[in-house]
Length: 457
Image (cartoon, rainbow, N blue to C red):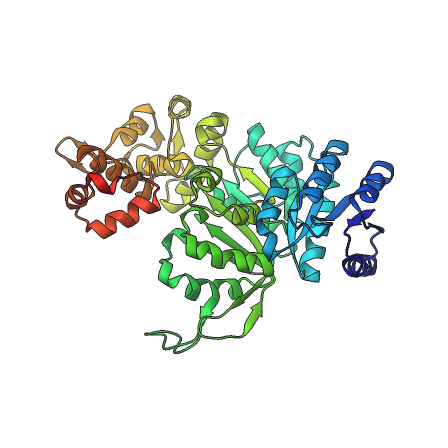
């Protein structure tokens, strides 16, 4: 049974009619006291809750009711119904334990999608599966691993895939976030529809709207042709927003709107378009820390992470390294026409002791370079160690990290921090030493949340 708690009779009536038309068993309550009584006696499967029950729009009554519901049943899914004017209140509600929030006036399809998602997820508790059982149920052929943490993740994405829940994938660079996103898409009802990948870190702020929402001819200088945006290309399918932690504040607002309302406007056009898309995001940054520092919107974070998947670093699952090495070698046998290629057990054991900061990407790079430089088809410890220790570029005493160890952005952050420390936070001198203009360095300092004192410059 679904319980609606709202003091507005029009809202209750509309929701009752909508949910009953989808053959859900529904009850409604007009007051917090009545709603709490039904929760205690009837134990509903899901609650749709308004936060304001009086002239006072603080939402305190609704938040208190949400706390009481959580005390009775911590796992009961709760959807908040709120208006744009109370988005901060919705975020408070999410912190208190709500599962989702939907704006008034709501979109029927979006609301029903949220209801279906939460009911399905709540009705399918996870359990321990072997890799063989998971492979029999889902399509995970491109994901290598039998570590317990990975099996739990595969079980989760298998259950989540059948819903339209937004998913946030977090993990270090090179841990396979894109593969997880593709697996979610492939195992969903949208699997035969488009899967559109977008690296948000690679889109200039000035081009964000054009890239994501498209533009019409003449919308701006050099707009000689109409352009279809990424969201439109992903319609009916899945859009994968990689590096979402790199998005600037202005673009975050624009992205939030389309995720909230599933509507957008093509640049240069006043006509509103709607989109039906499943959203999967990924980042190697700690978005909660970024929310705390004010560089990432809290309401956007809650919109994208109905389900959060934390991918372990490769050093946390060393028992999967032999499987990955075997997978890489099998592919390299065909690519380089060397059918007798093998890696010795001693070399694999040595690899398992490495920290591998670049994770799977770095491991693949090490193995492939070893294949390329070795005349023998048997790769032993010496060959593997030589590739780990090899420095692609050396200048004086400076040794650059190996390809796959760190991202270009991580190197840039390190160099900026070193320059600022060396020049005692004097932005002008640091900028000159880095070959940047002052304004360029200021932008990077702000982007990477590196503190500086203009008075010292």
